[in-house]
Picture 1 (cartoon, one colour):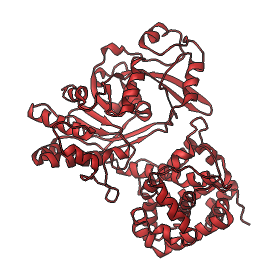
Picture 2 (cartoon, rainbow, N blue to C red):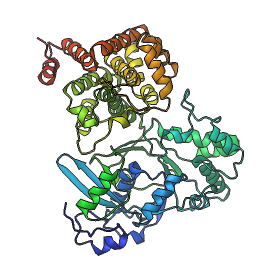
Picture 3 (cartoon, helix red, strand yellow):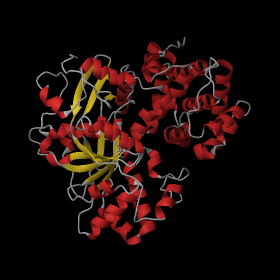
Picture 4 (tube, helix red, strand yellow):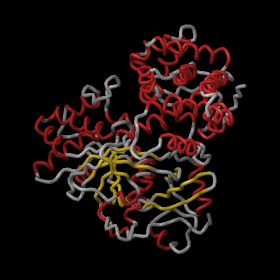
Length: 524
């Protein structure tokens, strides 16, 4: 990277002035010719690394004729207002830096052309934007907590305190979904086509979840309106993927020192990105297939693949890494026992639980994930991956356990993963260092984990997490054995024992020989 931009805040004037000098790839299109067709609520790092970069790619095609698909940023929270203030100073541009061990690339994302003023409590500017007939898509990255889900059912919770408060005055909504429902109601009676609601959150069945929230709230207001939304509004499911860590001082300093200017909110990510979408956009959509987005009739096979292999692998490695005081995901992948254990579990228990995915080899996909996890430039923190295990385990670990129990496959590796989570919740690394609370329900988990040291089945009695799996004799026996091994011999020993058993299973096959060739455990 050269230092060809003078060190001052990024702006469109600076971009134009320095266009011939900078080594950062800049938009080749005239941003003044863009108009907005998308309102995006939740302008975080992931949105700017993912959806905004795809739209930027598309608008940048010389023959795409996609100038009407620029993005208006939006939000309703105080941190959204703070982000808007930063981005306004730099003409809504974002520096996107892609990094891996042997590769660094920087570009400016110009697809967001404004950020709607954040004006609580009434949010009048956002309401006005949602009534603009040019807006054909309202996309969301809210995180799972923003969908008001019932923990037990996973469905929209009309008794959530925020929703109860919203119902008291639906004509003056203050939540994202209240604003969406109100806008759709007004557009309906004004004879305007509805916009599509596109969830870009990394949650299972994200379109169905968004639909449940919108229609669930609409039913409480107007049953006829809810039926109209159900019949006329698109809620496509999507699978989104790009590892995008948080931005800190080191990232901002990198931009200043290596690129020569200041960006108050740069985004750093891996080179890889993927977006798979159901083609359900009644009011039209950008031609994103031209820039690598896959449109499919049903996203669920791809979603299940990612949840079990990528998210499941994160959940499988993070607690062992934390107990051994490793800091980053790539450190865990460099650890010979953790990486070998992870590979064994994926091949032996996770991948066999996944139905075929169109045009995809699941083992090739797993090898891609291993390479991505090993990227040392991303520095994805173990603490981040460990967070909220009470939500992650029921999504990523328990479902393949349940299916393997049903179908007679191995569950010992996944039982060990769950035992490592229990040991982590006891609150100390193997060195004795105390962990900071790292779960919304940490106090309860910590208390239960300490009791499980004497009676492991206490942990499995958390039915909201384990359900019927916790009552399964085979799983309980495997979990209890794993937890006792961790407690008496350490987490490395427990993983080594699993690796040995896995290699023995395939010792006479080519796979067994291949495993021995890289495993830290040798079987004679």
